[in-house]
Length: 189
Image (cartoon, rainbow, N blue to C red; front, side, top):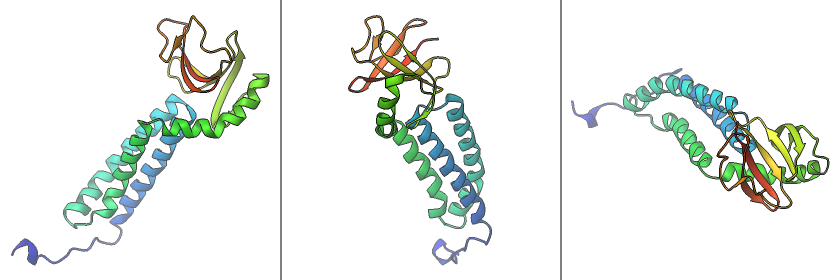
């Protein structure tokens, strides 16, 4: 019997359920990853989302391969990889970070006046704020070992800090310009 003479195989009822479930789980993980990328969110939360995404990929693999190779049903099996590929492509650009900044700039400008606000400011979860000689620093929980956040520096980057780069020695700050007097920062552990 030739390949062209094979009858078209239909995907059995219930076989699509694992593909739909793992695609949904992958989409939720990708939304979480984009949120962490947008909000300078928790490093541990980011890693947890990556871990769950890996579990979803393992759960997706067998039903997707069987559906694509045996039943020649491709669309359902390719949705999850497409979502993941788009998410990682976005995370490797500044798009999520720029969107987060655009959604938060007004809230941060209002909070900068007092420089004591904590909690959710725009999309950033601020753990504490501190007025330093250079300006107001809003710390988020996005760093692994280093302190990170958003800083309002009306006079620019201080002379003892690294501009447009990471800190070199313990206690030093590194700043990356966002817009106007606003910078992302990292302080070495």
